[in-house]
Length: 205
Image 1 (cartoon, rainbow, N blue to C red):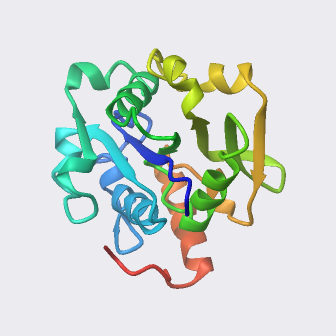
Image 2: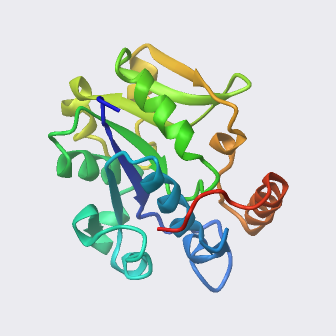
Image 3: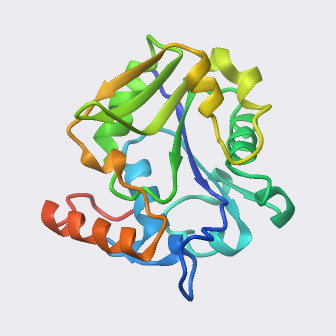
């Protein structure tokens, strides 16, 4: 693929709605963890990947992503919200032709979906994956939006940018673009969907 935007996997949130002994991203999923499965899919797209996370989560995913492709935020930075995490990731990969923002709690998003969004980003400033007309993730941003992306902060992520510019919905057959994990019930539902899909076809990294 000639056009190669960077996938920014955002994994610095506290996951406060997920009440359990371990962080939601450390829960088992698809032969790995939620975070590990999300990273595995991102890496298998063969697009560049940058993980934005905290030290406590970074130690458990070394087999999925190289150290040079991991941006570790301090605890003080992490609590500044998803917007700050996106801004930090974009700044870290400032030379990319664009960026795909993928929340780490979406382990069902398939590599083919990421490639479809990346391809559409060649012709649009903002692209989001959609399934049966419903907006999901990842969301792609072209390099022309760099100056706005690096100023993001707070918990709204990049919603204001998506609302400000004409955004293109890339229709995909992947229902995983709508599935995030905020609660234990969400996790069980995602595991059920994974089982309904059958064995994972990806080869672990």
